[in-house]
Image (cartoon, rainbow, N blue to C red):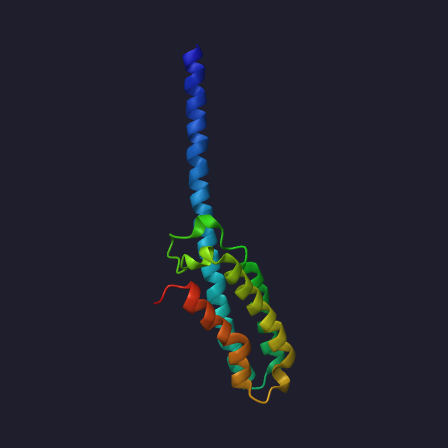
Length: 149
């Protein structure tokens, strides 16, 4: 009888253990795919901001800037230690080795977009202003924290 109880406990524990491992892998995949989706969305949105700003459609451009700003804040949650590799990540280990620097860059990107939204209409050099407050952050992050294509 004691052996049957131990066997049942072992089977139940094995089931929950295997189920937990599967779910933790799934969540790693979801995290990596989620951050890739946010970065991709920000890139597409940045291109729209660029076009709208150059066409002097500032109100629409500002809405997209604020969407991007929120995404950068959200991205801070998408780099836990267990998501360094797998599932097609383009993230370099330097993100986790220099976590404070990476987080500061995400925050700076968010802050710069708020500043960009407040000054884009008055900018004499729209292209230069977009580069300074938007594209430069993208380039900095890609050069330090993303695998080259």
